Image 1 (tube, rainbow, N blue to C red):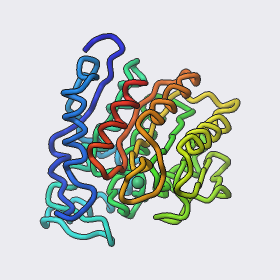
Image 2: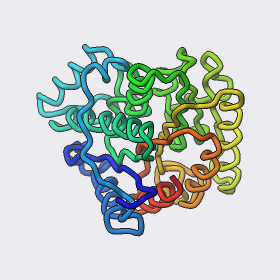
Image 3: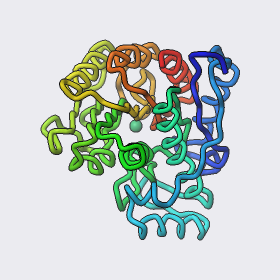
Length: 301
Ligand SMILES: [Zn+2]
């Protein structure tokens, strides 16, 4: 890996999570993304590292033990449907544990001086403490945030969520914890129906709901303004990016208009905050577009 390197955390077991043949959250999303990183212009800057499995104590800072046991049981029984669009296969719990472990590993790398990306699935930002939803089983980014607070002694962690859907799970998990600030840009109205600007937690939640179909510069500036507000007089020690790529033009699940360079613009602007950055994949349902956007944003890290 050359100077200016990036750690990319992944685990092959995360590709075994199979929500079914017609499901948009397909293994090809990450397969195409990894191929683009391994064969594209960033290859010489990337170190590809196997993600650890999240330890039980890391997970239990976010999800109660009985909930985790139930996920393991469903997987052990060969899988099952947890809600209208959240489906487990036999390998799904193992995949989720590696996804959360990748998020922690990315946070650790960032704090140790190397920007990092967790190329994971299933995604996490809809997962509540005791409820899987919206393709998500374990809230990867909150597991990483809590790890940084408890094991590295941080007191200010910023989560920026640019997935086109509101991260209701992330908000619910952090809205009483002033050590974490959560900023989300999302389409409104849209699944899951949370994320109004009035939802402020303990003053640590900054929601930016926006209608579809606006020029991308409006979305870029709106999220940047919210990040400015969230970090005014509050310097984050770590920035975790909840990096969904379904806000891109052409995504089948939503109507935002972002292009790959918009993600690079955000990352470049937030370097002014002087905090290490780790990025964790969330949604995004056109594999080639996810790959383009991930390349652009990682190039800017
Ligand atoms: Zn999404």
